[in-house]
Length: 67
Image 1: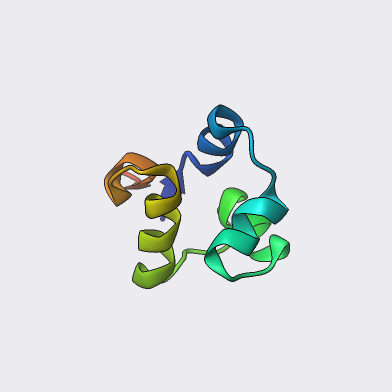
Image 2: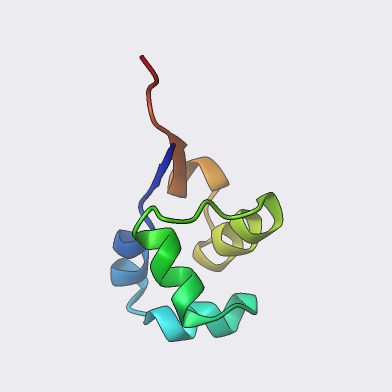
């Protein structure tokens, strides 16, 4: 699984799920499912999200430790 700090990053930048979704060309529901860890974004989508926050992908998305 992969975890993310998307909700925190949005709060820091003070943007809504809808605003982020519009910026990267997806639905608000897609952002919601990513934040809820129900959906793992594609590489392209993860890169677009990272670009919005001007951070490397690894600063937002992280693989969880596996036993």
